[in-house]
Length: 305
Ligand code: ADP
Ligand code: MG
Image (cartoon, rainbow, N blue to C red; front, side):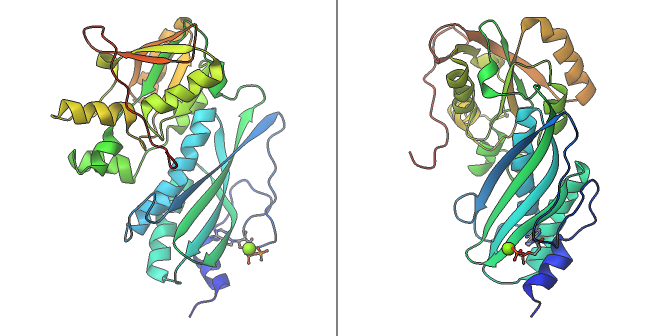
């Protein structure tokens, strides 16, 4: 049987790119850029809750990091370091090898150093903490939306939720199992967007967080939302408005930024769609259908509701 230390050495110790001290000591040593603020976030994936028993380990390695990168994107931060706390029922080398492959491949793409973690026996659970940097004062927060701002959405909504229900085919399944965090978009929105959030619990709920923090309302036109293709219009609407796990960005920006945002969309080859506007008044979301009538907005995901 390999020891805990052999496993860590083999699967999680990699040369660091921009870190003073990585895996192997009692703590890692990080040196943020002068003038940067650190953005820190944690996300946990539990078997039976966030993924099914027997889920492909390479995809889990990808997703565990991707959901954390998405939080950095939503802050306009550049992800730099990660730690990984892992509970495993047994020391399964094949599982660990595949998990590490998925994790390190995504980490390499964004030059994120895995600098530490913890490994213990227990029901399968994966917890990543991510550390990013953002130039002082430029972080994109939920509370910055102002009346008159446009509301924008990246990519397409509803794909992950549709895949979870077994619909949509392979391209859509990829969005559930291998989400693509919008890191470059987040970085490029610094100084342009007023507020941002990533869609983890559903468009309506996550935009709702921006509204609550900003003390403003929103008017969104359902017809304008970038939607996953689906023949069942009712299912499509639930997936688009309330489906979680898309990891697209929803952001607000002044109307004067439209040209810049369209140029950014072309540069990143990523659809950026204007779907509505921020309103003064109470923090309420109105979604209008094609006839201008308000739609009932379904609730998004809540672990305790
Ligand atoms: P300690 O007893 O000081 O907590 P550990 O024995 O838990 O140290 O870990 C040894 C080293 O390996 C530490 O540097 C720790 O950060 C790192 N480490 C442990 N598990 C992981 C993991 N899953 N991924 C990355 N690094 C890990
Ligand atoms: Mg430890």
